Amino acid sequence: MPMPPYWELVRALTIKDFKLRYRNSALGFAWSLLNPLAMMAILTIVFSTLLRSGIENFPLFLLPALLAWRFFSIGTSMALWSVVGNAPLVSKVYFPRWLLILSSNLANLLGSSLEFLALLPLMALLGMRPSPSALLLPLILALEFLLIFAISLPLSALNVYYRDVYQVWDIALQAGFFLTPIFYSADLIPGKYRGLYMLNPMARIVQCARKILYLGIPPEPADLGIPLLGALILLALGAIAFSRLEPRFAEEV
Amino acid sequence: MGPDAIRVEDLWKRFRIPHERRNTILEGLAAILGGRPLSYEELWALRGVSFSLGEGESLGIIGPNGSGKSTLLKIMARILRPDRGRVEVRGKIAPILELGVGFHPDLTVRENVLVYGSIMGLRSSEIKGRMGSILRFAGLERFEDARLKNLSSGMQMRLGFSVAIETDPDIFLVDEALAVGDAEFQAKCLDKFKQFRAEGRTIVLVSHALGLIREFCDKGLLLIDGGVAAFGDAGAVVEEYARRLRGG
Image 1 (tube, rainbow over the protein chains, first blue to last red):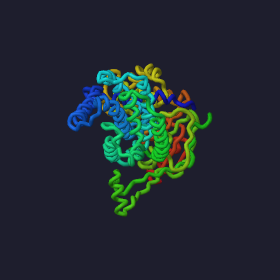
Image 2: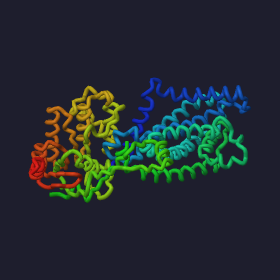
Image 3: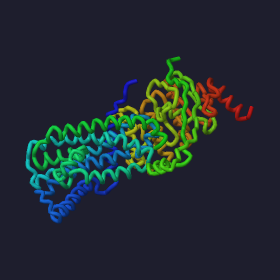
Image 4: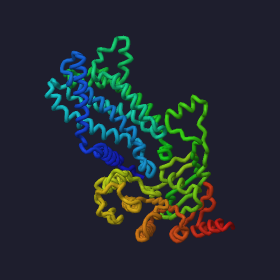
């Protein structure tokens, strides 16, 4: 029996997820630009005007990191629902279930890429230093995609069995927002905690985005290598967890 | 007769029904801390089912409610996984279960057809080429852009049937799906099935309509309490079931 061309399925599911993401709000894609812009305005007022962090060109310092974080937080929290949200498919027809997670992540990659593209002119306006390092953005997004996929696998599977996984993950994401150098520089972390702090793969990924778009310098090998290693370890663990939990999806969704 | 299209070997399936609902991490933690381990009621839906079906044969599965018919069908469709035993299937399967084939309520009719078709292994160009005939058979030409949740259950079932038929499966698994349609549509579907039989495709029907099984199927399988009570010529199996129903 020939294998069905699953990439056609992935494409159809990705388009479906992308449409559903923007269909349920009147402004659609505009919201996904308004949200980071509003965050940028608020954080700039707080950290640049009120608290005077002393960071040069704070909006531009913030924006690449914020977009990279949104890619991660929206990607994982969307994918968390990708099995449960497709219960009518899962309980009625067979196909490899992990394709649901992949498709959800791909739809999010598309959304985030568009956010970056749409906000690049603004970053240029804010005084982004044109540098060849900026061309590394796709590589960094690819690395982050791998991390998102690795985490989405077990999250989506656990969410089938425990319906409050999203609450727990929501708290984790809130903690992550503060434990990742988004609105501050990682240099502020005291040396004795720095090693632990930088174990968070998102810390390095966010720094990569900042380096190439704000500082105009290329990331160091460790900035890419350590998150890659972390993502691969998480992917192995996530895949094991997913394959353990997958057999009873149709009974539990 | 050709090679086996479906071979089912010693299939066992257990469902766990928890005594208390515990669907959240918090409840789970509270129970563990409180020293109340999770207890289940075990229900064996299938107990060692074996049979095989040749290519081009049609099988009717009958039996009382809760005898494991739908579970068996879902395992053959790979939707559920058995606890023991195995199923071998040669060819592409289209399951048509009660209440549909796998549609998303928030997508339009057209989008659902595209997603379903790609699950069934068709290219999007192939599906688009068949869109017209799918909608026509379902009688939904005017509803191409309607969201699925706005269709009646009968309309959804008709769409499910049409799209499953048009994906060119080798094997149909049909679970009481005809029950929702009106008489005209049922007749249309039966004609299609007769055509598929003539083309040598394999069909498995779960139904309480014993007359239909006797008329339409080559073989019958009587399930009682998850075990095979009778398997063989459809007429004889239906007769056996009727005898048991009479208490004979």
